[in-house]
Length: 406
Image (cartoon, rainbow, N blue to C red; front, side, top):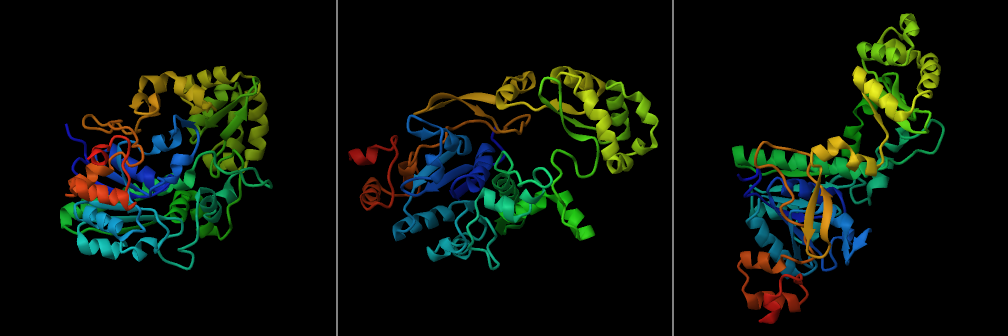
């Protein structure tokens, strides 16, 4: 059974996380994603951990793609991209705004070749505006967008998120824009140019915080582990020095929570009688709840609250995550084979379809692994490919050896 995006060809011109993750999400769903890399490769190929000369981090972000090496500073390489664009459905790029225009590979140039193509640009600050050329990597985006201003404890230095939030938000919105563009092209025969800013993706993800400021005119402040709108809804320390996340976002759950902690007597307190009152009186509620929770071991508390239907979870490290029966039962980790890394474990796509869903069909490509294959598909003869190699326009991966032998 074909996957949803089978038959869709995507050209990916991107490094590190945001653009490549968007490309991977499309590739997982069956798109033929051609990752165009410079002669030294995507910069993520140099990130640790490494095994047998390959970056495990790169492998995690670039499965199901083909790698084509092109030195885009050379006119012949630019022409190859244009030939690819004529036969593709999407061009996904994460260059600094204006850089591809100088090479004749900007949106207007490519759309002139293929009007139905979706041209998705991912950048730190967007394609327009006074800061459009400003450098923006994940941490800088988190700082600029306001995300760090509400992360961490009050009065302390902001705490950066433990995952690459800005890049991942940007990748999700870039994927969303690309898929919407493909649907529009299929129905209306018209491709679109999508401009996705990592800053704006992070602002959009901060829905409650942005809404609070726009309504009140007051900048939201960091709240540590507390929730902005409800209580109790935070992390609590237990007797074994573990942390448990507990949320009671409605009256019924709050009653069950208090009953489990043997704090039933306080349910009649009018200060805790509603969602809004509990948040307004959080300063009185927490001194009751926290000592009661510190009497429990984390595992026992999680079991008791879960049995009562109260949302909760221990703060797991990644070993505990991957060993958890739920994660094991769902087959979240898959064994894959890589030509250099050998057998390795990888996280599957989080989407499950009833049929034709995403899978780990192809290992992350080695640098230039498919250069020869793709150039042949474009009509280049062996002698032409050999000339491109000798002039430095491309290079061939380990599996592309037939041209060199001729």
